[in-house]
Image (tube, rainbow, N blue to C red):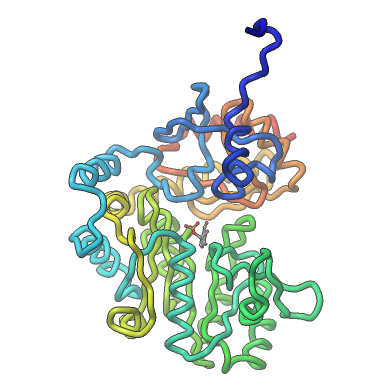
Length: 409
Ligand SMILES: Cc1ncc(COP(=O)(O)O)c(C=O)c1O
């Protein structure tokens, strides 16, 4: 046997993960490439806190990138999930739980007459685009630079560097023909949208937008811009799709559509509606949704779609949000955070419980690691937004503000 001093060190969890999982992670941003270093391995979470595998506690402002508006392991969501487990967690047939969630949503959001549940935001977007193409009989989709809509082939497209509006794939493996049907516009540019519609309007099936873009920093748009998109879609017979995977049930129960009073034809949801379990949904006017199989000829399906765990956790989450008290609390706490950071000269963009430090990648890297050492976990990339939850009380916010001001200098 080797003497203790000459033994090889145990491989870290990340080393072991890298040996069997591409990059050691199941979603790229988790690899910490944006901030450097190695990801923390989290073993459990509760309220506003995470604990790593060594038992170290972190105050969490990433919050799983958005679904946990009530905090980690909220007791009522946990009770609903436990009930779901007790009752068996997948039936592959009709059940009352997705019905309850569908009725809750369609009963309150006028623009969602019908809804179909899927397993992720990506799937929701992919299905909504297929539906839009089917009902319009057109192929082109307009998206905006800086908006993220998941990883369906046609959405992994960015504005090309050369010819204006000539899109190029932002991932390997996207067929040129698929990329060619995605037209990419700059956010907020009404003239560019008008010019594109003038040129290609009759070929455009849909315009898809994160109406509150929150995947490349937080970039609130002028309502006139989104309203003009609505008009252009109407004038040219295209559908307007709001991707509210982040903003839905977060800006308020009805998300951006409710706040702006601009009505989308189709909407995609995810994150909060599953209470932190895998979920997505697309919905809209019954006239369109009735084209989806088995009623219509737009095929869409899923073995685990509307699984009772996500449906019951999502229902329990939305019930907590219905009376608006959580949104009022989040707005108050958000205002406190924004005012405190701005008073200290820290550039912060905020909408409700979404907040973002407007700084360089390099500066953010330093902030991220110094806060991590102090037990505060920010999203591991300068372009990702921070999330508040109802579990973040004033104590948690003051701790963030105090430490952020110290490390951001
Ligand atoms: C606006 C938006 N759309 C779609 C998606 C894709 O959702 P998912 O990661 O559940 O596939 C995301 C994910 O962050 C998103 O923010």
